[in-house]
Length: 445
Image (cartoon, helix red, strand yellow):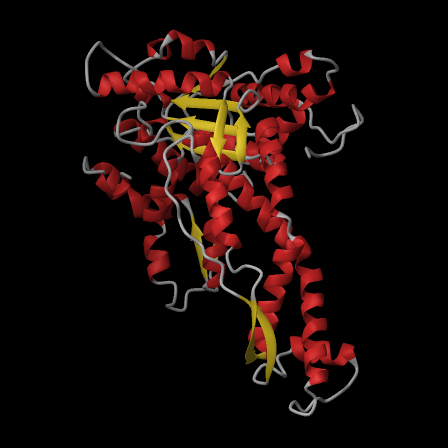
């Protein structure tokens, strides 16, 4: 499942160096973080080649990322999951509460993960069978047309010609009689945590009610084609197989990214929310170490799911986490603040860079947007300066600076402009007045 191909083993597994090279396309700097994440991923990927019972004993090396906001923590993990097509979910630790408090329990992380990945697999499976389903629907519609030739004036008896005419919409307004399945009873059943499998069984019973019954109905051919194609897709897509595959992939390759882990640190002895924060940490322990979580798709074992946590730790420090949780996050990496040169690279070098995005937008308006190297550097310098004078939000500051810089360009985009060149002078003219003022609210997210 991992790519590109390597000579080692018999699988398409990337080396840590190759993983980092791919991440470099999207994330500037932070080489230490990329390196440790890549090694952890490689270890988990090659675990399946280990023979004997020891394979099950090799667990993922969970990671704690430490660094200010906007330096690439989330982007590294998100790009990594996309790169290897692994089940992935990002959550904020502050969204959860200790069991017994009002709010979401931490096991819902796994339920959301399997639910998200199941839908992704089903969507891919649906696309894969859509061609077969379309041909089957065409054959059924053509048979209906030929059987009702006395009612429908066909231009040809050739099935290939008829198929082309149907796809071109030539018969859309004609009507034919088809058998339509009775609507399936679909109820949203709410259940307490731990009862998901029973809920799924009840849901299946309701779905089966009337599911095999069909009734005849006269509809337009355009509607008939869609109805029959959807029924063929449902017939070809085996949800039980998808469930089994989703469970296996989540258990073996799942990645959970828990952001703002520092927000659930207990900074001092107290009651109320402090107790709840420590409770969230304790609830996370079995999840990260390995436990069974009941979901509507089946039971998920979390032993080999990779957990990556992150936090800025501005008002706390990693040692404020309870010792048990610290022990379950053995790999730690500190991410550094971004420099002017980092900002320059983010603006212009990375794939789908900010500059490329704005150029693509203005191209639709028939405006050519170009940047001089001096203009790019000045934008980066201003973003760094604003970060220093106000709240440091890392690379996100570039978004606010670029929006302010090009605000007038986009406003006047329909006024017969053909080219805009962003030079150092252009940047200074648009932004220096704000920088001279202490009022920087227009740059604040």
